[in-house]
Length: 215
Image: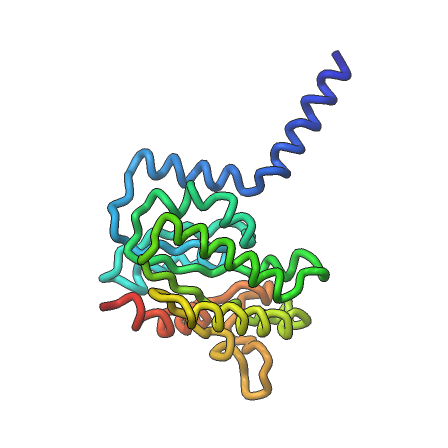
């Protein structure tokens, strides 16, 4: 009996590890079952910078938005859950912010790895939505992750170059807008953890995205 209890315990741990953010995804699915989403909305999908953008609908009042930012997600998480949180919605546009946590997860992760992951996600979305506009918000520079900035800048460059060759895509550069005159992240844009943004940071994103979302 004791052996069975131990096995069940480790099975549960393995399951949780194998499917990160499962509870958050299930919460989205429950929400959608209670209130189905109308087609044609703008879908925001990505990591906590989207999840914490609590004023996103108010910032684009004439643009119906579905916000599916979750946890500290990385690009493999978006790939894993694409069929649950992207494919079902029939969005009019798809806005992606992801990749920052990929770099932070391991020192072995290089720009080419993040670019390859983004390309995989992009191609997966394109199988469901060949012509839907896809907007990628560049990976931001964070004070707490300054050591990663050279990799982030290179990852942004690779993704931007890739998207320039693709139809129905846009690359939104917020990276440089969040730097000061010395090329460092602007402290006034961040909350105490020096990773996530305050209202001033989100206003930069709002201004950069408005031409693409308001039409």
